Structures are given as structure tokens and as C-alpha cells.
Image 1 (cartoon, one colour):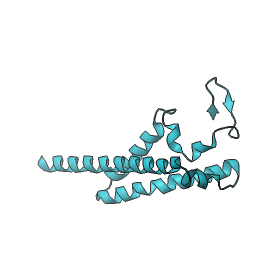
Image 2 (cartoon, helix red, strand yellow):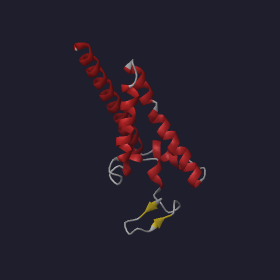
Image 3 (cartoon, rainbow, N blue to C red):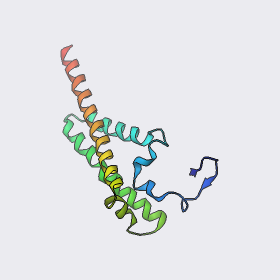
Image 4 (cartoon, rainbow, N blue to C red):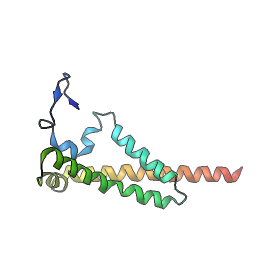
Length: 126
């Protein structure tokens, strides 16, 4: 549910429609919870793999999945229109969203890979 600064409920018909397409706009309002969750999911996916490249590849596939989910939820909530495609691919904010998502997934994956390599080296040392 969405609430305004006064605690009043906001209907999804009255909400800002770009939230579903430009997800980075909600990071500061939600204390970066979405970004942290995406980072942790990519970190865990890469850390659990024996071959880190599989985890990195799986993490990169999350970006198109998140974008398609935004399109699907937009169409369910507001009916079919081409507006999500226009918001994603005709505006700079759409490309900025893609770059931020790719950066989050790659950084989470690379940190998971490096931590896994560090822990394997430490095990072999002892």
C-alpha cells in the first residue's frame, strides 16, 4: 500500500506511474532496500556457485527479468499501453535505470566472487 506524507492512503490509480519502470527513484524513499536486496541476491547467487562465472551470468539475467516484471505489473495495474516502453526506452531515465541495475548486479556478483576466492584461498592455506 502507498501512503503520502500525511498518512493518507494513495490509490494505485493516483500514484506516480513511473515507479514501476524507473525503480531507482524509490531507493531513497525506501532506505535503499530494493538496491540492497538486489545486491545481496546477486552476491549469494555468485558465492554459492563453484564456478563464479555461472553466478555472474545468472545475476546479469536478473536485469531483463526485473524490467519485464515492471512492464507486466504496469499492464496489470493500468491496462495495456505502450507507455512503459516509452518510459523505458525513449527517456534518459530509462537507460539510467538499466545502468544502475546492471551496476548493482555486477557489483554484487563481483563481491561474491572475490569473497569466495578469498575464503577458498584461506581454506587451502590452513
